[in-house]
Length: 605
Image 1 (cartoon, rainbow, N blue to C red):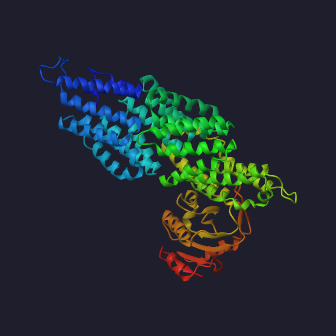
Image 2 (cartoon, rainbow, N blue to C red):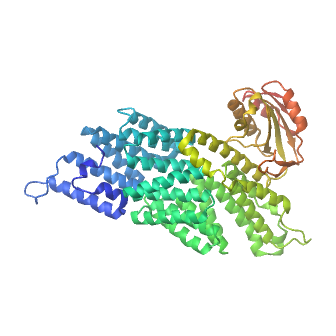
Image 3 (cartoon, rainbow, N blue to C red):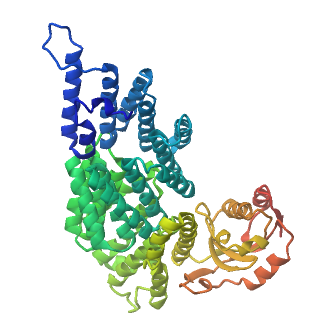
């Protein structure tokens, strides 16, 4: 029995939750509650139709209210109501309805508490799935929501495996199958496999439409918009996002509307329509702020879009809006938002002297604006296309500035153009059709490809960001037999390094010279763990070293200046396993060396 089944004889609530505005669903819930109250009133009260199974009806009513609260983003209320419904179903011996209500309560906690809820969510969902027949609906839903927890926790490979298992089990349950396709498409958007995501989400949207499930259809179109953006198909993205916004407006879905309007405002900015962008972003912020509880992530993103639109319109209040967004992203611990806010600050600082055009402003050196921090953060998130946009904006701002007194150009000429072109090479999506084939035929292979590509994009983004860094690099030549496995050569998401060269058994990593020695040692220790064997490394300081240009497809490495690696590679190959040889120029004292030795290395000088 599903949680709403006891109400089917007296109410269309199940259909309304999928397709009706919140006010209409709430009115129906109130009508059911009135019927329940009348059925339990004394005989002298007005006659009411008999409602057999009163306790089950009450449990179903509580579940319905919880489902609406979950849909509308009232997550505290959703947790309370869904937990109560699960308890009530359990007391009536309705095990399947109880477990389905428990699953929805877990989902509400995941949305409310994010990563802090993941471990307990997986444990509870595993218990639900293992409590009975693995082919029952509750087991499929539990597997689906377990994958949600794994995705939130950052384990994309585990999430895909779980979702594919749930998809196989969902054949008897078409409604659950459509929801799982939504989640799988969302995962592939996160992995950057936009072609696979688009194929799955188009299928999901059609299934939802056929079933009259406007809620599921809105989710599918929202992610279709994100996939189309990833593919560079702006008009396709706009059509999908407008469909999501229309559906969510009908449903009273604050989260979906705020998301769609924010994305649409970003599209308008990309198309040069700052006035439209400001109106869209203002609506998104107002909707997000009016939700209970307020949707703070979308408030931050909408505030950022408002600030950018006001900046493009020449509004002096833009900086305050951008700072508001940045402060909220920092408070939320949102790494992408923080990186975008850092980009906004750099852009605003660079534009100020251009617009004032005062003599003092014209003499301000371009290096005073910190573009590098934002570029590095975006590159470390595996978003070289965003780094490319940052590089393009920086060039456009500096080219718009008057020339210096000596008549020299503000921009770096051909070198900067090449750096931008190299960072932008990830934007064409020539592998889309292959992704679509893999997602149906060999999804495990798609995960491997997507994970490796994400690591490569992250490395490319970091190398592109390093073209903005001040001179000075720490260089490590690394030797280990396991370095023939290409995927293991690239620094991880947590690392502070970028890889510039790789040969069988050898690799060269770089760090900005300001990187803490503990971070460098930690990166090498993580590489050793990934390789499963001791490594040998020779570290040196290149005081004037810098990355001139990241590699183009087919290049053998980044273009470097004032960096010598030949002798360093030979030295690394001659070291004993586990040995780290430090160049005296690094300036690492004995205490620092001891901290690196504590990571399991033998430090020599």
